[in-house]
Amino acid sequence: MNYLLLVPVVLSFYLLGAHFLREGQAIIGFCVVALPFILLIRKRWVVRLVQFFLLAGAVEWVMTLLLLRAIRIDYGLPWLRLVIIIGAVACICGGSALVFLHPSLKDKYGFGKVINE
Image (cartoon, rainbow, N blue to C red):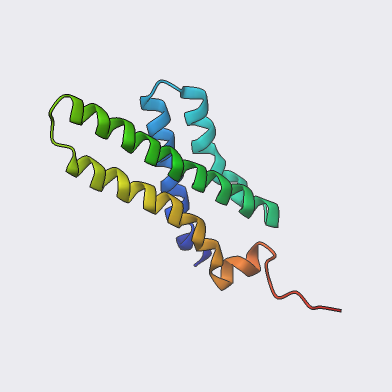
């Protein structure tokens, strides 16, 4: 069950990796594709690190969206479909950081209930 919850996270990283590879940034692309393997470590800091990179990835998608939209407008090409598609990818990438709010993933990575003493 926990592994199915992580599918959006892994897919988001694979899309980001493909994006960087397409841009000619192979080292970053391979690092991003390898990053989901860190989820095998069951620690709180792992979740925060993955969430940080997912949100940074969403920002990268938005910056790419704005750049490509401007280029298409300059050339007089249609741009609405591009904005919808890349905007959806950015939302999925950023939204993937929220899967760690699921109770089973909270327990898995040590975000269970804290008892105040």
